[in-house]
Length: 275
Length: 312
Ligand SMILES: Cc1ncc(C[n+]2csc(CCOP(=O)(O)OP(=O)(O)O)c2C)c(N)n1
Ligand SMILES: [Mg+2]
Image (tube, rainbow over all chains, first blue to last red; front, side, top):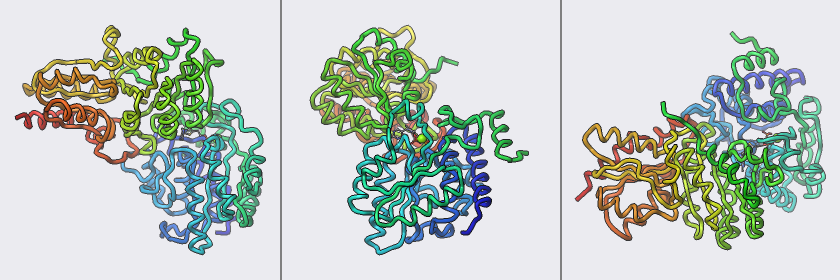
């Protein structure tokens, strides 16, 4: 899809509205990390992913692994915008029998490639997908979205080491560096010091961008697509809760829903008229 | 309506009450707000260690502290304790180091987070580890009391707590709560219902339904799965002659499994197990999940009828 920067921004704005609506309706869920990742996933799906929404299991599709699977409203909003599921399906978020399970689940939702919810698993899974593509002589790629709190899990670094060792160049990671995890700011929970240097030391190609500036997002995705001799990671500096003032940079909205008043304010800030 | 409170809050309160002992330390893995160790952290930051999102490291750091004379209490969601199962096995249970692990948000009752968060196997896996005491209390007061008894154990333990509120049953009955001793909540001679955790109050409801039909059930809160209160089970067998177990856990390996293992070795009584029938959960409200999994009071009552019908 060839979308202009302003069209991509509008795509992401619509997704933001759906994210807040989903969490509000369910009165549960994770708005913060959905809003921080959304510009990145929107641009990735709208302009890069080789997928067929009418054929979600097409064998040679690119894979997208939302390893921080709690940030599922962001992914569901994009899948709806892309046509994998309907906007009506978004009403099933956290509802019994719904396609939109609390955490993304490949058994329940078309377009979801990985059942997540337990942090630190997606990078290894992506590595397996990328290795399979290589064995199949396929051009398909595996994109993995990681949270910054998530990379405290040791298994992430097992996967990082293995990916570089095996020179898995079709494995491409986006790190949502929103500086907040569950209980608090990352800085308070577990300092990670120089994150780009850590990935470089593990043998990865690294680029840093502002994850809410659509032009930088697009050049970041160019970088991921162009790096094929080794695994690559785009470290996107983001704001947790981006787009809704009272959620921004606020650990309380990692996993909490807005009340009626906050919902109305969020809709107004996102330029959405609610009947 | 009766008082409601979450067992995880009982755990949080117990840590505060244990704090007078300067050897008590707390370990977290970015879920202290949820498991309720956060209150201890606020009051005693120097004795609280954030391990980031790193459960494996948390367990073994706890082992090192325990081997050095400290009494570590580590917590995360029940499901994520399982990430560190082998650390618990080889690093904690095998050297018999008294690390106290608490897994909150256990069972399908946890609700809309969905199957990835609903541990239905924690009680089974920890029960297989030598030296480890395994508990799943049903109410706030018993969680508080049982947690406070842990430092005297000098052995490792695993305790499952629940996310959602359950009826408070033991106000004023604190002295009856002892690790390893089941509590008889109701006496009857037709059938004995042995339950743990969230399903204890469901079992009481089932017993009331049964009573309305002229069937008198004993209800036991078996908060400790290991060591199992085998004397109590033997007396239930002679008193009632039919047993039902009830748990928000896979029917394989949990409370039902523990009771079955005891029965086949020692004495005979028909046993019906109410539990998750070896399947994963999904997103749903907690009451919906008990229905979907067929483990609420209605199913416990049905199981009681089946068990009674099997008496010879
Ligand atoms: C293994 C594991 N431990 C703990 C959790 C509970 N948990 C859910 S979200 C979260 C914080 C995640 O922070 P981060 O990766 O930074 O995600 P984001 O800020 O993008 O929401 C935690 C600890 C989990 N899902 N998996
Ligand atoms: Mg984060």
